[in-house]
Amino acid sequence: MAPRIHGSSSGPDIGAGVQEIFKAVYGGGVPREVLELVHLRASQINGCSACTDAGATSAAEAGVSTEKLLTLAAWYEDPRFDDAERAALALTEAMTRLADRPGAVTDETWAEAAEHYDERQLGALVLMVAITNFFNRINTAFRVPAGTRWG
Image (cartoon, rainbow, N blue to C red; front, side, top):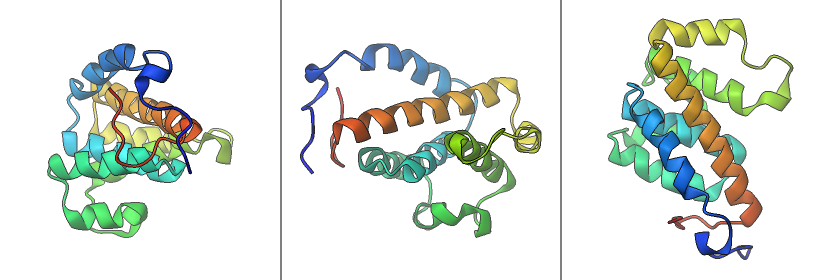
């Protein structure tokens, strides 16, 4: 498929404001490995090739093992994911799959995440999932190919 736009010069400057959100996300106290797993999992669910490509690279750079990268789609069955990662990934899936059921982010899902993350960290996780879904939608609409970096 051919891209529908070519780089950020073809549209509005979406990067400027987003950088402030990323500062909040990465300054929120959540381990970078968890944030990268969250980004990659949301991107997998949404089928965004540009974001899964970038997300796998970022996760590896953050220290996520190859085994976790390869089994992320089945995190709920893989013993290599700890309870805090599972809680973050459950929140990610619930937030990303909003249309699958009413009240997708259940009290149980939130409580489980709150057992592992404080309010500041929960805010960072929510922002990471939201900004990932934002970019997934932009990149799939514009058909941004894997390996493309905005900037």
